[in-house]
Length: 152
Image: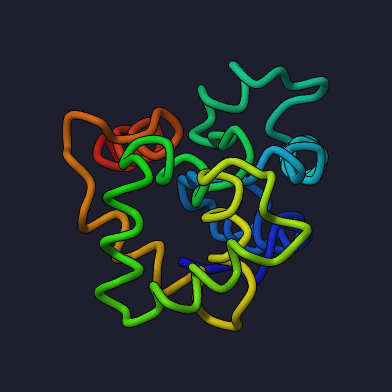
């Protein structure tokens, strides 16, 4: 269930967590949002000074950078480019790669940024990237949250 951004974790936990509907929850966050999640979990009464391992025991996993980064690394550049091509955006990506500020960056960095340059592209692409994923190469945070949820 989308919660409208990581900064909404506190209100989401208040509504659905132990002080609200008391639903068992799990989730993913980007590395930059780990602090928001940690503080939200603490305010919801789920522990204080939580280390990443503590968060994972609660069902909350942190992506190295973000989910797109995890998926790009798991799939590899060629597979991600095939997904972009299937969306008829490969030419736009090639144009993006030629922009001066992106020329010297790695293909992985270029792909990660490109996915975030157009409204809705990240969400649309994430679903397609997951569909293209070899189930033996599921990124650790995604695998962790899916395993946790499957036990609910």
